[in-house]
Length: 308
Image (cartoon, rainbow, N blue to C red; front, top):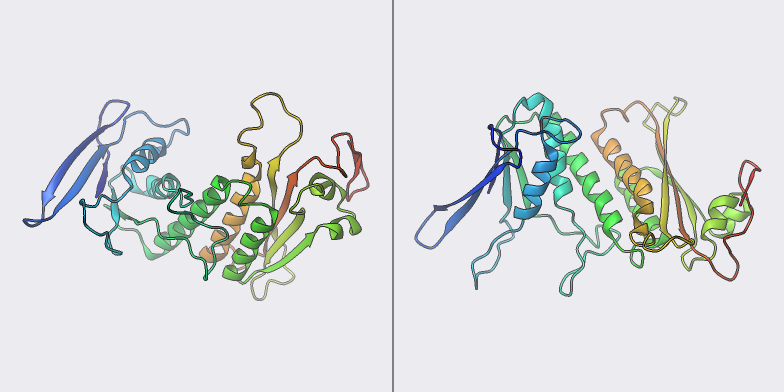
């Protein structure tokens, strides 16, 4: 059990641990953390930087040697924060960010995409507040937490697993969960329909580029003006770079990952999408150089403009 308290302490915060004896054979480990008085660079009362660091270091279940872990065992995070109305959302969201679901070790791997037939295991984490949330607040926060973990899982996945086709499969899974319409324009069809830029960027890759569009149109809002989000989904950028700058280029798809997750959260939360159509456009490609593509190519974009 993790308790996050808000009392005046030094700028780094402070931690204390104790064991609560439940019976002669078992004990409950409790870790208390007092938030620092110094706020984050975002100047928010919730101190999300401190909460993230604390939860990340204490989020794993501890099982006695030789004992099996029960499926119903969880790490309980109890949030006791100042000015509840101003801190509950940020604090709950950062707990989700501190415990990303993607894992790839010798013994365990979270495969992508997440589907009903291929689910990702729960993070074994539950959050409680000193001031209880309303049902509407709980629903909003849960969908937001799911979106945060979806986005971080996609960004954390290496490009040999999250290639263009895997990203498209994840988008299709989101479309199925949200009952959204999806259009995928991929490979040579991009060229035929004059999407020269994205086609030129990704045509040399093994997994071909695609323009993916998801649309959520509420009943009765077919003619209403909607909102469109556009995300950059460059799976990996292998174009020529200076020494050391190639590492971490898998994160070039973070924009598309975050907007895909935000789209799902907005559709499920239904706090704005009950009246307003929502669309997300994902430009998915691996920027590769190959026999039919070079860094000096001149590409003709959909608008007719040329870039090189």
